[in-house]
Length: 410
Image (cartoon, rainbow, N blue to C red):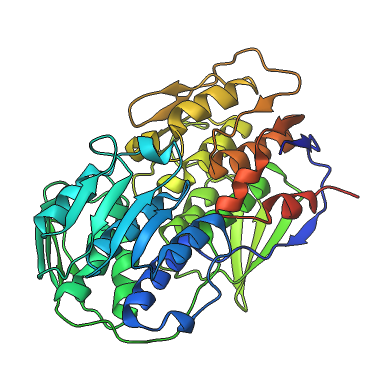
């Protein structure tokens, strides 16, 4: 499905209330842990999107094939879950892109713990053949800078195995997601201590507990971007928690420097436009290390370009192995709007360089929901575009296109 976005410039509805989806990250952790605690029915308001459906649909099986499609979180979390589920025989597979996303660090850690996980295809990548067994307390060594989901997956199965210690040979990447995992585990009765070089999980078993999933700060980021680039827009976002476990709440601080004021009243976050706060002596330069919040990268980069702010964003090494190579995808698609980005192994920069812009860009979403939503913001400001395969937003935010249409005058 392709969608043509009309370029409206500043001609938008002045006020809008958006009911954001529930947090995908919290939903995934709560569903997995509540299943192990025997209280999955006590989790309320989980995200209704492709990723959560893939994970939830894969829980509880004892044999057969689990196909998670493009859901990387489900692939990693379910791999660990089934490896520690005695008596199960599972083949876990995914989309063609999923078969290109490395999973060896997680498999290596599981094997250290005594798990029976074999590659059913190419070494180091899905699909995986898993023979679940009761594991002893988990004491493994693994890298912390490849994917926080590998670390989180090992953490979450530890109470099922009598606790344990994860020793980290490199610094944690996306640390807020690991802290989120620890907090959700503790909500269900576990005891977790996260150090810089190790994570210790006490032998406490999970216990049933109710949990209500809050709104998604990652989804909120697109409304922050729109508020930054559309001065007349006011956006109300019910259900967000300012002191949230979600690391992407950092968007509040980042976007304050890009012209968005955040007010909180009665559990409603209200966004309004104001003059940007310059964060360094150079009147246009902007720098941010997004290693802890890589899911904000596309939103931030697009916003900075639209504001004509020179910038350098770093800490993006994990973007190379997401749904697509997000660094290269941003370079290619923003060039269609006339922005010539400079990219490195883990960085993106722009210092005002231009290239010929297309009259009506056709944006390749690269099978990436975050590319689709971030580039839609550019389309509105830069005269319109066709978003190809726009249905990819169902991965995290199924109502995005309907909500976006509401800011355009009828």
